[in-house]
Length: 96
Image (cartoon, rainbow, N blue to C red):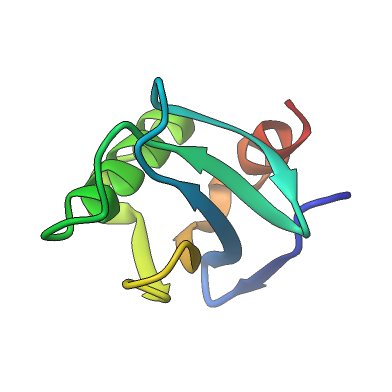
């Protein structure tokens, strides 16, 4: 399945499926139209959210401040946005 993305106002919005407490941090693949992000952090005190932002920023080559959690801050399914010029890299991550 491909990644469902929306481009609006210079930003790309897309779904993320977070796997907390993973053996290693990794970004890649998709599940139900959302990008898979595995993080070693536990979902306690925003540690997993911070790890998701850091991992995605590193994978896309942007600053962490450019990765915004739009919705779903307390769940495994989130909606994030990043600068629109990263759309090609984002789609490539979803295919890996």
